[in-house]
Length: 276
Length: 248
Image: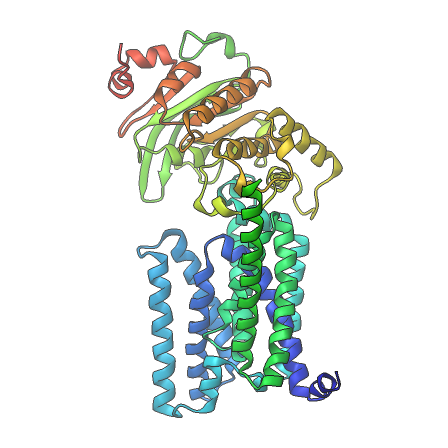
């Protein structure tokens, strides 16, 4: 217990905790809608774009967040449009975009500054980089995401479950899709430097996928994903502090354990009900 | 009670729910259907048939007000304003494993009534129960949508459509993918809604035999032309002879 108190005496750990909990909460809530709409890969694509934008910003000596947030938001809009009526299959388009941004990021960095620890920490995350600006931005973001889910919950359900019906009953489907895309983009940019470009999309996908194993209603899946994501993040970060493991990877591993746990419970439940 | 005539005289006193007069449908760069004249009256049962790509989806989108006609307009009766047409879209792949209870799905039919209200009222909940009762899915209200059979899922979506509207249902290939028993069941449910609840029905379908048997009017959409008439007239027409190809 003492050690946990000691852990929180470091301001950078407190900042990492605040940002991490808020970002994982937002990611999980948005993730439910994204996963159910088969947009899971968008999170992955956006994180790579975010890596590219961040590397270019660092190489040019610009503020990382101010460059990458607009770039990733534009990329999110682009990916959504592709999905609707693109000349290219959207999964292929996302893969191309991911690889291209990653290549741009790595090349620009290698040519200018060389592969510093900075870039490595973007790839796999570091809790040391969180500053006051991140804390404020993540509080703003989570207010927006929670507000959206509280006020427009039924519209989000309708848009996720059945876009055509929602459109026919006069819901502004494109508006909600864009809102979700923009919020996802900001979540990814904020979370990426802590979790790492390679790992951030797991925050979006895992909690929803895990909750869907056991829960039967949309509302319970949303609530459970949020709670699960926060709990997994906290356990992951504490583990990484005590066992000296990388923070992002630890959080993902805890999420994986939770998924396997829920999956096996589902398996057992199903085999029991089949026997009856 | 089938009408013997394409545009029955006795219905001219009744006001149509939806009507298109010399309407041109299509997208910015492409005309899909020109000079469309149809009127849907209360209690009608209209089946829309035609080959894939002939413009059936465009017609539905236009009637629902999702795309604007290129020329003319779709006149809707006052009771249909503001998205209160019951729409049963084709099922999507994403819905196959969707975690939602039947109640959640049915209640989402009331979305058009709660513009900025973030919750459903008690009255809406009661109406949702009534509609589930009508379609015999009330006992499933707490079940998970993904665990239902195809026929049950369609009835749940019909209950949702009833929550959105009480005058007109627009259905997009509702029996596609159902087994014959579930399809027959769905047709009976539609007959019940049409005859007992006075619900007008417009259905896009490839099941031409049932369309001829049940509908009051057939709208055939071809590549160049379209044809709106009673099933009897349709069978005598050139398009009907070729498309319906009823073995006699």
